Image (cartoon, rainbow over all chains, first blue to last red; front, side, top):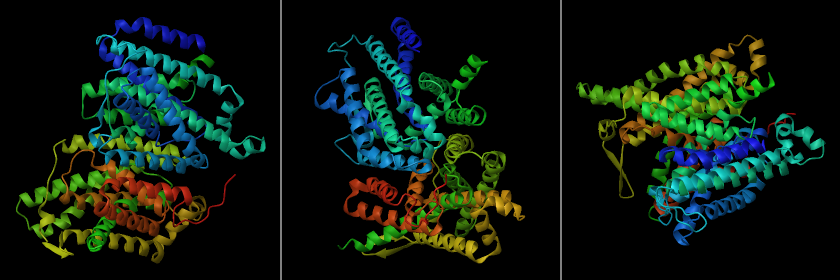
Length: 306
Length: 298
């Protein structure tokens, strides 16, 4: 796994300058959304579907935006760290409540929480209300890249964050706590009998997932240069779930490939016929759920096993 | 305190609207255990069908008083086209799957229906304000309200009362309760469970479409109309307890009054209030205010 991750990182650094600006943009956004989906994957392995992960995406984005506007901090890495910290804090507190919930109720409660944030931002003049806020151009370690190189610099930062996170989650999945996920999904009571605390395991996973979503949100904010309350709306959460289901839970790379594919379908379908791109997304999701319940990654895995 | 009259009237009108929009969702969940995201799509379908059909009706110069019947007819027709297609064509093969997976399937269907609506009706807004203005207005506490709003209240009472009667007072309703209680056993006793699912899905979706078509005269009908309705009706239904019709009524009244009070006294917390109530209810009574204890399954 580390060799694959290293190769991906090298490919982005070496290949990045050859890519056009729009492709770098899609790549960076794919890393941002992939980070959120990576967190959702952790939860999904334990059988939990969060319909409100946009909450932490939005918290991350507004933290980055706040830093940029109030303190003039435009460094990509600082913004990502701050986004991760605020999201982790929020998830740590809310996790005490959410770790008690399973199935549909976990989804609905996380949905309600994200909609509360949406309701707050929409009506708050200071946070830009429905129009959102613009954010100054990103810098890297105090250096402001020439405007032709900003996208490349942010893409490389995104690759470091995304691949670093993928490696850490990969390591986490090999720890006893990480391995509990599928066991919880399978049979919670047996896990309790083995002496592990299901609630604790879910709380930890929930905080990790939120942290990743916070990094993703900060990254998206600095890439797009604009934040708005739609980032907390339920349709945004829906997109993340879409990516996670599309990719499957087979590998830590899957969410990033899923996000890249989502970006590709989105751009392509939007280009070809702007009024039916949601239909293409919906059809793709339906086909994956029905024919590939383990996601697209299971195609790779099956070939390797066979 | 002089605003208390308008707060109550607004609250009742909004509650009635919420109840019509949400009660089908709780019915479908109660019977089929599906958290149905396409509910919002049916609301939008109803709104588009109502607006276009009533627009055509009025443009031909037919009696405007009958436009209310046309609104109802439009909602019924559009549901009869789409709901059986979705239930028979797709959902019935999915009932064995997990609740969350079925939710994702209806989410995929919602995405598809969003664009289907754009393909049928285009992306330009529709306006039919005539039925809204036709009945004049009444006055409460110095504020004028269009009498049209009373139709919404009447519809909410009729659909709520009708459902209660259907479930408690008729043979079909008793059979339906047996299906809710134990589909396997009902099937063994010769109840056509598949047909009950089809009828429930169609009827529940029809209520959403009626909600949409009767809202059409009060707004401009644009793409994305159903998106907000989905989360709002989720909130209403969750507050009362998923699957409970009286619960949906209670949820609608709570959300309706909370919203109208916040609009009159503190407009900046409008949405915040609604979803905070939802979160509070989930935090303290996860199965809603009108719930019965369910044994934990191993």
